[in-house]
Image (tube, rainbow, N blue to C red):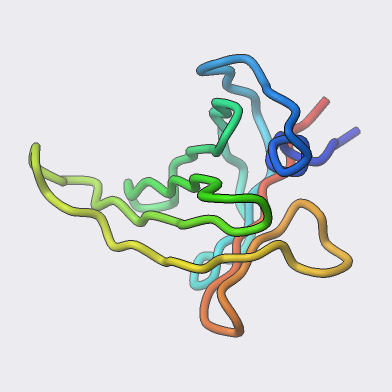
Length: 110
């Protein structure tokens, strides 16, 4: 059984365990669906992408967040690519998107 990742809970003000990692299913624009280990921290999440990159998401305010694409070989101090103004996708509480440009979904297996 798969449950909605902690982001829906974070959007409602519910906190999760810091650094908690769980196996899940993720989809990201340009990557399709894949198995992932999702780390939640109460206000966001992080998971590895195929080919060594990392995706991180931080809730900036209620209903709005920023995604970050981090290169697999990023050096200390390197800036990730920021995808700002992401909002929850209607009818898909486990998914966030920036218009039609970029979307991700993260489901944690239970």
